[in-house]
Amino acid sequence: MKRKLCFLSIFLFLVLTLHIFNSPVLARGLPQLSARSAVLIDVETGQVLYNKHMHLKSFPASLTKVLTTIIALEEGNPQELVKVSRRAAYQEGSSIYLQEGEKIKLLDLLYGVMLASGNDAAVAVAEHIAGSIEDFAVMMNAKAREMGALNSNFINPSGLPDPDHYSTAYDLAMIMRYALKNGIFREITATRNKTIPWADNDWGRGLRNHNKLLWQYDDITGGKTGYTRAAGRCLVASAKREGREVVAVVLNAPDDWLDVRRLLDYGLEAFKKVRLVAEGEPIYSLAWENSDKGKLDLLAAKALEVLIPEVGEVRLKKELYLKEDLKLPIREGQPLGLLCFRDEDKVLVETELLAAENLNYNSLFLRFWHWLREKSRNREGFYSL
Image (tube, rainbow, N blue to C red):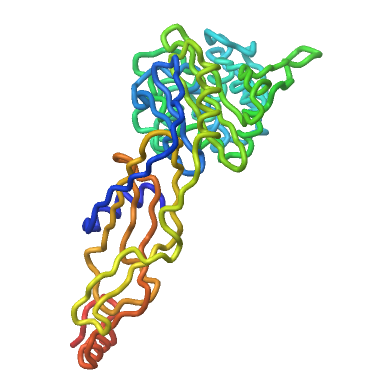
């Protein structure tokens, strides 16, 4: 069930029970970081595995370019040509030395955005996709909200400092998590070196990925560096081991490389999966007057698993919701409710609750009356009795 649909559905449910799930775990130290804010998430579930001021609004620097790149991949054709404007060619900061009037493939520009962190390339991409930096920023903010990045505001595609251009460690992790779903993005962010065309030259532009973890960390799958004086050193990186992938973000981190390595190691080594509910497991027995059986079991539609750390204590809220408008007859497999496990205010996992069997009225008269009413319903939904 999509996150948006879950929040809408909660308004249609009544809370039936609340239970605290406690899990004592083995001792292991949490990563000690230099970063002002940081987060570690599981890519598959989005579960937060480490949090240091993860919702603190900060300058994201060039980590912005992850969002720029995924929008361009979704909205543009990687093989189409982009004409470089004067505004793009003369952008301040890091550059791949684009020339005004130069034509270059969008895909090549995106390598310049992600590997060399070219501000000129980011502006050329934005203008090509949306017509202007300002219109591209509108797209960035809309896309960020879709990804679950709700505490961010983007003004430009490069991350150059602006009082109104900000994000959070958590939001940037959500953006990276989303981007990793795209195969071309994965290929770009994992590329160490790339040569792209250079107009009016017999040689190409040689690009080297600023993410040195690609050479130093065996399980790395991608990432993006960032730095401005206002933002400090920033880094987002992803790594995968034994089928599990995590994303780490550090902002304003003097020891950004060490911080991220510690987070990635922690995420890949210090957690285990715990099954909270099995598929088809009875969750609740619902008493039902005037029914032929008097009660109805509600079953979990799917198995629910969470990651449990090897340190401290995990407290999960188990919440059961029941639809307000339930009425007989009930059919086996019919969705009747929702089961959620929360960590503070965030839903970690959830599943629909399904009827275990058919449930009918407890008398032939009531069954016949229901059948008759349904038989007489006209096309507009009214009864002709």
